Every structure is written in C-alpha cells, then in structure tokens.
Length: 272
Image 1 (cartoon, rainbow, N blue to C red):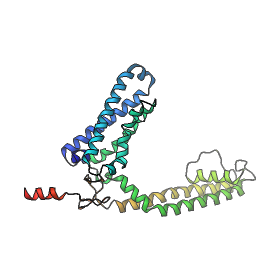
Image 2 (cartoon, helix red, strand yellow; image 1 turned 90 degrees about the horizontal axis):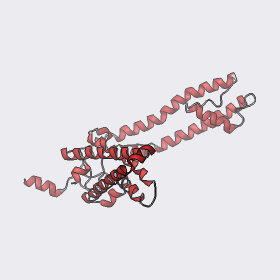
Image 3 (cartoon, rainbow, N blue to C red; image 1 turned 30 degrees about the horizontal axis):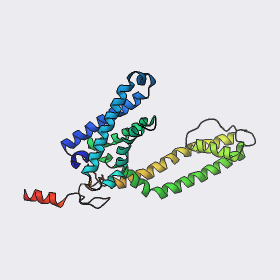
Image 4 (cartoon, rainbow, N blue to C red; image 1 turned 30 degrees about the vertical axis):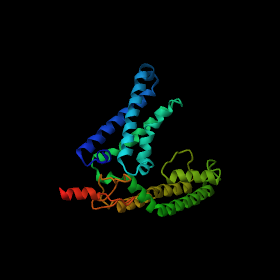
C-alpha cells in the first residue's frame, strides 16, 4: 500500500497518482465553477453533492496515507501532509463557517505530484533542492541585497542633488530613492523621470546596471542548485517519513536515517 500510494516506480503507483491528479483537477474545477453566481444558482445542489463526494474521497486517501506510513506524525506535519489535510478541512469547516469551502482550491497544489509520475528526475524533490540552494546561498544573497540597497540610496541622493532644483518630481531624497528602485529593477513606472541632461545620463547608467543586478542573484541560486542537483534522485520514498530525493545508491534516508530497504524484505528475497 505504501509503495502504491507514495511511489510512482510501479505500474500501480503510476496509475494511482494519475488518477489522483485527475480527481484533484476535477475537484478544483468544480470549486471554481461553484463561485460563479449563474452556475451556482442553477447547479448549486449538484455541485454541493460533488464537493462532498470529493471531500470524502480525499479523506479516505489521507487516512490511507497515514495508515501505510510508519512515522505518521512526521508525514502529517510535512508539506504534502498539511496540503492533504487542507484538502479536507475546508469543506468540514463550511458546516460552521459560510464560504470556507472555496479554500478547497488548495488541492491544486497537490498536482505537484505529477513530476514523480512523469519520471522527470531533475524535478523530483525539487522543493528540497530549492530549500538547500537558498539556505546555502543566503549569505551571498544577503550581502548582495545590502549592496544593492546602498547603491539605491547613493543614486537616489545623487539624483536629488542633480534634479531637485529643476524637477519637482524629485522633491525629496525618499522620492529619489523610490525612483532609483524602480529604475534599477527595470520596472520603470514612468511616474518620475529626470529632465536634465546630467540626470538622464545617470538614469541611463542605472538602467544598464539594472540588467546586471538582476542576473547576479539568479546566478548565485543557479550555482547552488547545480551543486544540490548532483545527487541523482528518483521516486523512491522513505518508509518511515516519506521523504523524497534519494540518490540511486542511497541505503538510508537523508532526513531521518531510516533504512530504505527493510532487512526482512532483503532476507525474503534472498531466501526466494
């Protein structure tokens, strides 16, 4: 049961995930249709019955997940465990709080399981890879952001000195810093613009710098992602905590340390 529900390496597991994704999408579509006044007025009763049917189905599926995994509490407080629970709770809360059933659209988050079904190795455990990459690059990104903020203050103050006397839009240093932020990030609302030749030259310099500034954090995170992605992952999950993202050669879970292959299973295979 655990292999069928949590893994997509078998035909039954793949069929289960594909069927689950279809049901999730159908339930989300019904919730969105129910929010349309004309459709709700005409088919409200049928949609209500369908939403309760989906809720009961997801409740059974959530119960099977808790039953088949060994460390139930670890799965219950994990990301997918909380999302699975939130796919059931809103409809129950609607019995006491009117309108809370529309939070059922959170079920669409569970479509992320499609990456396991499609055997797209580089996307399996991507949440863990992104978390590891962000954690590893947090100091570099922090230094980069502080440097960019310092540059924005400097350029904003400089533009106030250049444009402040002739351009009423640069009325203060905070206004000038706001212009520097929108210009350096290449957003460019256009509500504040320099009019002096020197101000326009500085603005052109800041615009060119903006392209390079945008690329820096992308490069930092990409480098860390490549480092984290060296570990080739597959759809195998830990029987204890349901963690994903294990390398093909791994024998133990990277999160809880539990053996990925049970000794009794190995003994039964050797005896066979």
